[in-house]
Image (cartoon, rainbow, N blue to C red; front, side, top):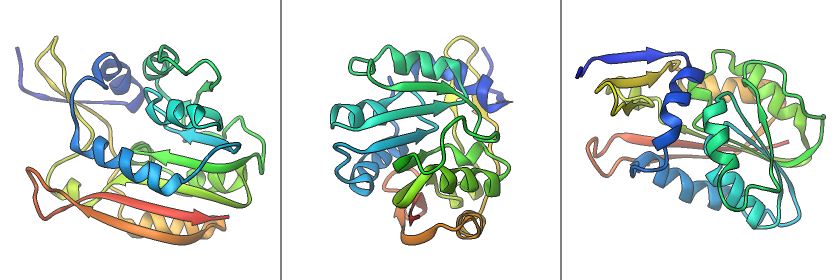
Length: 216
């Protein structure tokens, strides 16, 4: 067994994480879930794109709330977990990197959610440009990320691989808050809310989660 760190491309890292991603409590994920429900609001009857949908927790919740949901993720392993969830049958899942053009129509969605995904995207200008393209005029874009301050503490998306004993980390990019905001505003989105949530656990007092809401 090894306690060394292993940094992998995002797709490979999340493929390895997928079988047990939902099994262990994670303070970032728990806080993220609460904030997403608050920021997305009532999605009944709306068309929603869930970018970086992972194992489909949010996609399923939104579909069960009456939304027409399209989930996109770079990891086939995470998508397999998402498709296996009860309530996932009505959701359209697509395997796609956010680094590439999305196979979605312009002005097609009332809400766009991007959750814990931009940490792994080099080109924020492209990603926000695509979000702006697919959201309808008057629609809403919600972005939820691990706070950049966590990188200063050496914290990024990671998991303990029970097979190898390694600390496995899907490769992350050190974006700052200004990087997110500059890319979003230049895409034509308009910031309506930004919040920073403090960690209550191991890194008490440090910002843990960053949420941003934009209007199209």
